[in-house]
Image (cartoon, rainbow, N blue to C red; front, side, top):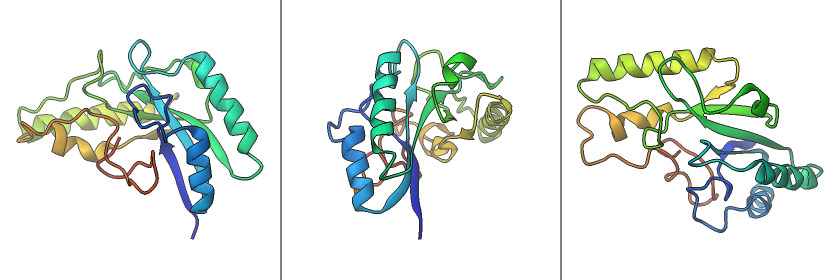
Amino acid sequence: MNIQYLHIHTLYSKDVKDNSLSIENIVQRAKGKQIDPVGFADHYHPGFNAPTIEEIGQAKSFVHSYQSSLQIYLGIEASILDQSGRITLNEKDKTLFDYVIASLHPNFPGVAKVPAANVRTFIDFLQRLYMNAAANPLVDVIGHPWNLHSKYGPGAAGKRGRGSGGGGDKSFPGQESPGGG
């Protein structure tokens, strides 16, 4: 069986505080667990949570140095800004990455807030937001839509999480699973 992870956050995501989530450590763990390929997709929300161009260059250097032993992709996880499908990444910056994940991070500044008034409003909002984001030519894949209902949907008062990060399989640092970001 070929196990692959393409939504791994590293220390380049400013909200990641686990020092074991360096690219080098994750690559070594992936090799040990025979996970191939892997893809790094840090948060990209300029002015709040985004790697700098210098950090992207460092990440590319690390990725290229490990390419012979493992297939590695360098992606980015942009935030969906509103129901029109706009994201926090522009066409020029997209060229720095192998792929773009677009995700809703409701607690990041400047991002559309999820209406939790009733189920119909909530579903209509998400449907428009994700359909338009999926149609955005800068977007290659939609990220973690499944955890929004439990965190932000009707009846979720008191359960609202950060909207990103967290969750995941703790046996593989940075790995995303349903419920993680």
